[in-house]
Image 1 (cartoon, rainbow, N blue to C red):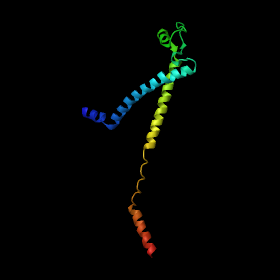
Image 2: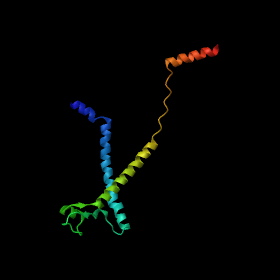
Image 3: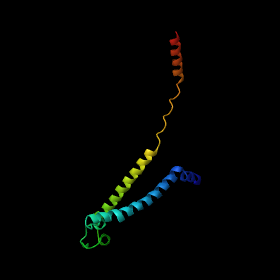
Image 4: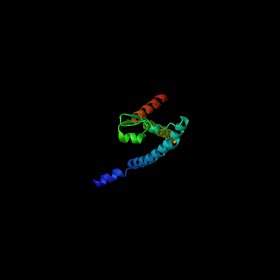
Length: 137
């Protein structure tokens, strides 16, 4: 059983998947930082100091309007639409970036050479011989 697991774990596909997941996690952190530390502050500056991450809808009467989103979550139920917008923006950036990367890799791939035609079958060879004999008559 251990040998079977070792064969499975050391297959190229599993190792490739593990590398992809690790790079994906690191890439996700970069995009998170890009959105939270660069894009959202710029959007906030353009919209007059609007900070999406602090916007929420209170679903509990114990929540006061001056509370931050994190404080409000501790007190009661809230709908954090600002957080949702931030995560949605993260997703859009990641999806677009991956689209560009995959598209570039596809462009870099050389087209596969055309396969040579299959050799004629025995019956095709015989028909060719018959045709050649009839032409000589």
